[in-house]
Length: 114
Image 1: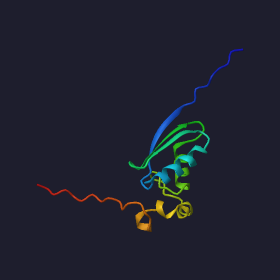
Image 2 (image 1 turned 30 degrees about the horizontal axis):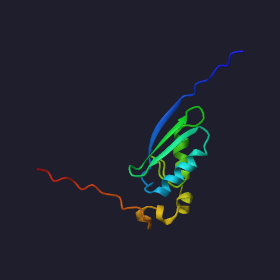
Image 3 (image 1 turned 60 degrees about the vertical axis):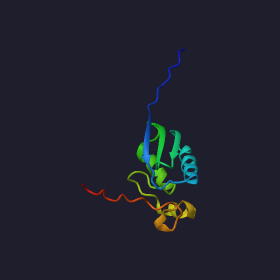
Image 4 (image 1 turned 120 degrees about the vertical axis):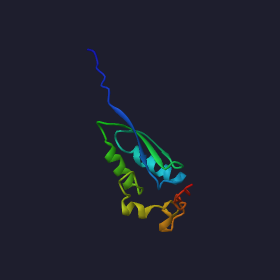
């Protein structure tokens, strides 16, 4: 008998995670996402504030991945962090406005017009 291999559609998504700004945040999100069936690879770039996720589309979808990141305590694109998970984050990983150690967000000042 001939075995048939099924090709599963794999996508790569880049999700904005602006509050993941240190090595601890990176480790926490990557470890959390890798527990989900269908997530093949998760890489957090905390310098850019984004998370790249490679996933199998018939096992998990992008909204579930964003929700998983939010359940880990971080904002993910348009999905806000789950409040209870955010409260459990170490102080060093919380937002500046909440007394955390993450740098204050940069505000862009308007450029002078000439």
